[in-house]
Length: 311
Image: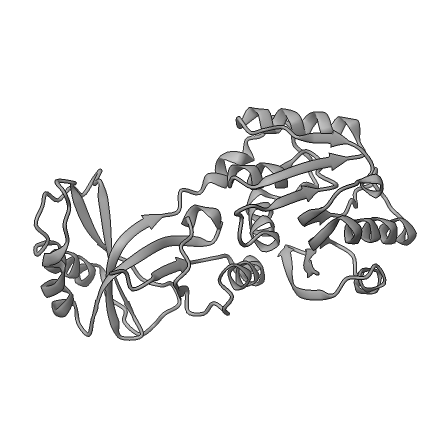
C-alpha cells in the first residue's frame, strides 16, 4: 500500500518566488524545506524545479527499521539500486558521503534481487524527513525543457524555457481535458512547453513572421502546430485557461488603452488567465473584470517580470 508521494525540489534564488508559486498552485499547499508530501501523482518532469518523485512504500523511525521492511519488495527479476536522497533545505538529518553510502548498503542488502548501480531497471530512494525514515520507488526529472532551448527560431525577449514551463503549470495545474490558448504566442515558447506536456493549447499572434517561427519551432520538436495569424481581440470561443505574455519590445509597444482591450478580450474567452508583464498593471487587470488570485516576481539581474494569476 502506497503511503503517498514525496517530491524534492530546488531552485536558484532568483526563481524562488516562481518555484513557490508553481508548487503552491499544483499541490495546493505552501512548499517548504525543499520537499512536498502529497497524495497527488505527477510526472516530476513537468516542473523545472522538482528533482525527484518518491512513491512511498515503507516508513520507520530508523534506517534499521526500514531494512527490516524492504525484504517485502518484489522485483519480478528487475535489476535495482538504492540511493539516499535528501531535501535541499531540510536540516533534520544531514549525512556525509560515507554515511549515505552506508545507509544505501544497509537497505540494499535486504532486497532480494540483482543490484545494478549503473543502469538499474528500478531505482529506490531512502529519505529522512522530520526524523522519519521513508523508502520508496524513485523517478528523477528528465529536464525535458532543456532540449527546447535549441529552437530554429528565437526572440531575444522570449521567455526562457524554464519560466515558460513553470507558467504553463501555474495556468494549468491539472491538465486532463483542458483546452488552453496562448493569444500572443510569439515564436511559440509557451506552446512548446504546453504541448510537450500533452496539453491541448492553440496559439495566435498578430505578427505573421512570429507565426511562421512558432510553426517551425513546434514542427522541429515533432509537436502539433496549431497556430493562427490573428488579433487576440477578435478571438472567438471559450478556453479553460490562457497565458498572456504581453508584448513589450520596441516593435510591439502597446498603449494602456490597447492593453485594456487585450485584457478585456482575454476575460471574454478564458476562465483563468496567467499574465506575464514587465509593467505594473493591477488597475488595468481589475478594470478588465479580473480578480488577482496570486502572483510572483521573477528577476534576472535588474530585469523584472511579474507573473499574475487572474480569475
